[in-house]
Length: 111
Length: 113
Image (tube, rainbow over all chains, first blue to last red; front, side, top):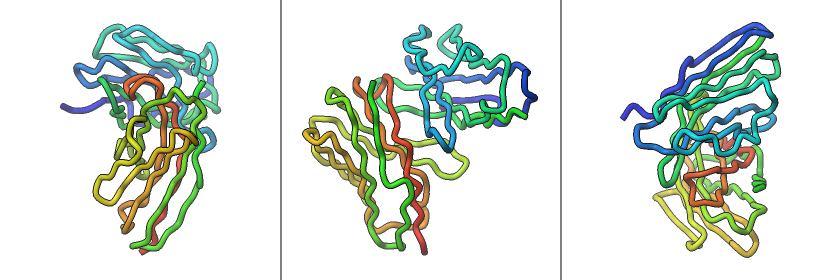
């Protein structure tokens, strides 16, 4: 198994632009999580899905953030419009029964 | 919701010494406590976990202990090696680990050769 696959690995964008981060979970995993990692706040859970259905989006910082999971093998996290304070590493993780497997992350820089 | 506190935030030890990282959690219903290691520029990876029905678990040089009464759990690394240098995260979950997991802020461990 190739593990959790995220794209792009790095993204640099200008303030105000739309950013879309992508994630392919491990086949058979029924939970998918989006985390944001910063030095100040550590790993923050943004949203998670079970069987493609959003379960808890209370960590989504504001309406500029949205996430979808149209099928079991794909999820997106969108930021529109992006702001410099959104700069962080965004991790996707998936799980089945116990223990997360993280993707390699997307390092987002908003200038 | 669950709150996980972790300390110290940074820890430096000499190679061969032991390192201990401590965490506390707030929700007494939490029943699964994983630990993740994140090397610089890489993804967090699960290194060991413990369930609430177990007090201690070992895997070679690493061990975790859990005190449910105090809502406290710890990671112990013995005979530290330079490759142990990384950021370590503790976490707690209400549901066995495959649902929402709350992470501590992380401990940066530096092993000095």
